[in-house]
Length: 338
Image (cartoon, rainbow, N blue to C red; front, side, top):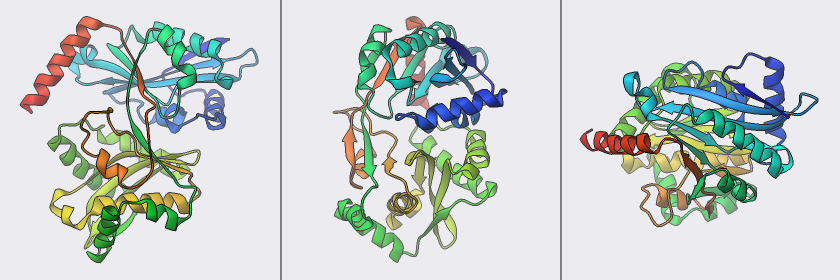
């Protein structure tokens, strides 16, 4: 087996093999695809990296794609670095030996570049638990909510809590409308809305060029959809979604507090699910629901749209413990003073 470390997408044939492997894998998600990798290229805050495993015939039989993120730039850049791997790694037939080899090569590379690595599981990775633990990772409990869309629309609607059904109906009575974002100017408007929200609640938000890339490159392929709710023609709520292999992923979302009494967030959530159902999607992924037993502001909101609470967890390895502790204290202080 050979391992390639990919930092740029230059070889179209290799990229095609990578994409085909992920699309055909039972656990394949957009987060391990070259499409997702590409939207972070040439961004100063990010450095995407993928390890591709090839067999003797040159066919891709394993993928581990992650995004190195820098919380701060300048002198602090490498003191605030982490690698986030979503929905991976993937190996042919979930073969333990291939998975172990892929992880060994990844660890050897990534420990030189980041303080810590986090694997965020999108699906059940129980088969890989021993391999991760043996490779030095610790498992952390983490929840998500999945809504099965393989049901009649009436059944989906009846699964929604009565409070949310009321809010969706109220939003319609208020005259709110829903639809896809159609151009870059509207995308910028929706991003500014999100930026205001995320700044207020002190959560990080990717810079605009990441979403601009997704809008430009992924929307035409049907692998991303950007949505908005409007009041009298004004954009008051938005949801950015990724679409892949019959699944919709809630990526980023939020609504203007000044219009919260019109319930745009409830309308947009239901309408995206309904759109997914009507367009052949099988599952809506809420994109996370926090840790068990700990407060998580929007978990209650998400749970009231039906669905199943799952605990696929995360795996984490700290490569540089001293820097990790220093960075953690610094983040806590900066978040407090902002």
